[in-house]
Image (cartoon, rainbow, N blue to C red; front, side):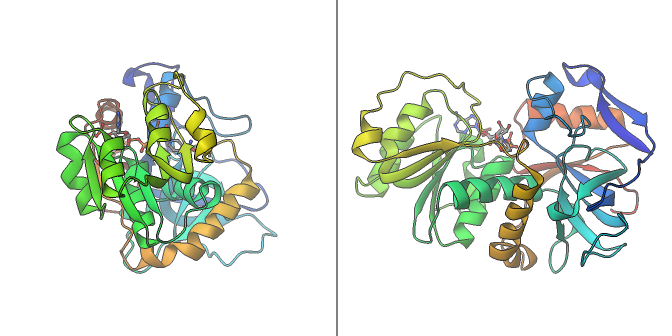
Length: 333
Ligand SMILES: NC(=O)c1ccc[n+]([C@@H]2O[C@H](COP(=O)([O-])OP(=O)(O)OC[C@H]3O[C@@H](n4cnc5c(N)ncnc54)[C@H](OP(=O)(O)O)[C@@H]3O)[C@@H](O)[C@H]2O)c1
């Protein structure tokens, strides 16, 4: 069986195809025959050596897949059946013909959802659920600002928040603003031309926004504090522009703000199962109906290492909107 590994850290030339043998399944785990694997920015950081796999996790790239259950560990109680179409958050190892995953991280693929679309959902939906619903205490009617609305996380956050009954503001570069409107965003702010603090304040009659999901950091950290409404929640899940800033904390106190953040990958299996259950309970109906649907920018063939390198280059350069995928199985179109 084949998989993609990083032979050292650095640019895309460290990506290699290698053969591997499956190991015995651990109790409570299932083996998935992979149809598609999602590509995420954390894969780029891992390849570059800036985001190592946590202890015990597979060092092979790939945090989400779709495919078919091939085998379930013996003595494991589950409603999943061999052959069933599924998608899953992995603990790494998704860029492979087969990947082993805890059953508590698997979701069924049915209804309007295709295997192609499904591969682009788990990493973003688990992350958004954890941060907007659990940490951010998002409520229907809230106003939410999503930074980086055209990306994998941002595009999913917009759709999930709209399906939840929120008013959604988002930032994007000039060429990607229209894409964010197609996802359902109410107000798209071209961050290269406009000040998001001013636009959000004007559009909320000076009140500000209840929630901010930020992947940018840098000078956005202070501007988020300015932009938040009283009792607002600001959640950082990345610091693409840096994690250091000169901050006046006075407004955090005066507006009773909550500043928080998290990272999904190092969370326990129990917590990931809790997120999976929450995603299924609150949002999966909207996935099955097609209301939440990842936008697939391009699909690359995993068996062609140059194509995998091109996929990483595309994400490195930030040319994409929505999701990039690897096609792994020849059985899907
Ligand atoms: N903490 C966690 O658990 C967790 C989980 C998953 C991902 N992440 C992190 O979240 C980040 C996003 O991941 P992703 O997979 O969504 O990556 P992505 O698809 O590459 O999206 C990144 C987005 O950031 C936008 N962006 C860049 N600079 C910006 C700025 N100054 N203002 C507003 N938007 C800006 C880009 O839009 P433009 O091209 O328009 O600039 C792009 O849409 C990554 O750093 C990733 O490592 C964290």
